[in-house]
Image (cartoon, rainbow, N blue to C red):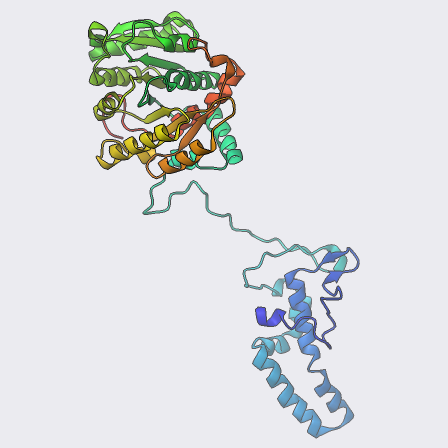
Amino acid sequence: MSKQMTQVGFSRQGLDIPTGGDVDRAPSRQLSVAELQRALRVALSATRTPAADHQSTGDPERADAGATEQPAAVEADHPESQEDRSHQGSVLHAQDAVSPDWGANPVPVGNGIGERPVAVTRHAPPSPAAVVPGLVRFPLADLLRRRPRDRGREVTRVLADRWPGHRRVVFASLTGGAGRSTAAALMSAAAVDSGVPVLLLDATGESRSDLAARVGGAGTRRDWTRLTGAEARVDFAALRRRGGGDTGGPVCVVGIGGDAGSPPPAAAVTAGAAAAALSWPLVLVDIPHGRSAVRAVVRAGGIDLLVLVCRPDPAEIADSGEFLRDLAGGGELDCAQRALVAVRADRRGLPAAARRGLAGVCDTAAGTVTVDHVARLTGRRSAAQGPEAVAAGRLLAAAAAVSTTHATPTGTER
């Protein structure tokens, strides 16, 4: 095709592209590729007209030379010219006879040049959601690593769809005061705004739950010994039927007490989250800070998503990435699909050093989330409610929805 198109516009062909020969004067539109090819075929047949002129003038020698030499030259450059010479009339005047197979995008022909439109069947491109055999998709990483505008559209679509099933999300941090309870409350606000009931388990062991204050309602308390067995399933199902227990809404906060004010055992917390997931579609767990507490909960299993919250400090971000790298290297958690790093931004956003530090955790975590600053949540006991809180937690809620389910609430692998 490239050799043919380079000859369009030569003299004696009647079609000069540089001077506007590829424009239909009547409707003022450019000719299609198929129309240019027809013009080329007409021009190639016109190059054989001198032989016919010699035959009509009675010069047999020049006529024979033109009949033998000129077509041979044309056939050398254009192998299809033999077919054009035998079917010139049908090819040039019948639209159905032209079926080029050069991979171009056909353009419908207008009615102004004496041609009729031709229906073109376009093959639909493969769906981006299709899984290529031999490759593993990471839906959480696909969401978090999109461009902001595309990610915003996907978040809206995910939260508008039906909730995909039970999810258990653990909020953790390596240092205190990083904003775990705030991040959990923001995710809860966004999920409730999308019509998803939420149960929050405060497993920090504190007598007074900051998480209940962040949600904006009263909470209930349970001893860690009541988190296992059939009793826990019945208890959480009753809370769900009552519409959130004492809070009177689609969100419920349950503080889990430990022995002598200490945090409850990680195994009991995991069992309680599994029992609650039988009745609640989204279960959020707030655990104490520190490497040992986080590792204990991870080893207990049953985590669909681990949200590691940290300040916008490059050193703290680097420590979070190193900790996740250790978890993934030891086979304790598939951090590439089930872990993300959430950084709490301040009034001015994220510093440049913090943004550079976040780039270093993408090799082990599914991605990063920047929790927008909400001025009204500066106080530790301010409720995360309102449009600002919902907007700040939408990405976290969508991340929980697209995360891969680790196991069913009963503990069997899917």
